[in-house]
Image (cartoon, rainbow, N blue to C red; front, side):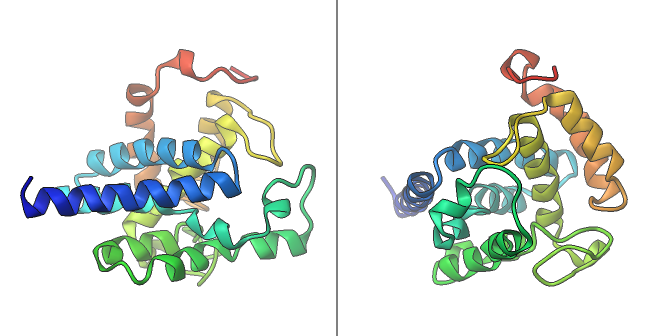
Length: 204
């Protein structure tokens, strides 16, 4: 095994270890991250991003929620409606993820995507209130992929709605929460990457 292969193996092992830690803290988070990485990487490819950019999008997608390790486990698993205080605590996770990963130089291109994946196209997102093209493209892509997955498959506080409801939510938020160009690319690739039978949720 040459040096490049050793480095690649080391990077993959580091990502896997971080995902295992996240999943122990919040069961189901690793599966969510893996699905988001599939959607986001395929969308980025459809948008014509370079191979180097695709790699960064994939890494950022896998690690976008790693900051949740720093959030109280009881809050991550809380059932029912979340209070504003709960939401404010959860909103810290994207900035926390950046802090957790900052020391890994090989992840530097992915950090802005991770920090800003909850920004909104209209500027009403967090943590920095970025708007439009000021939001890194990778972050705009992850935002769409993550929302689709949360709506289709559900989360601790929200039951699964199914694929069609998830797609409808994305379309309704086009130009407000999400970059219209990213939505268009996602709608093109989504049927190709997830067979309908894998969406075994209510609403389909």
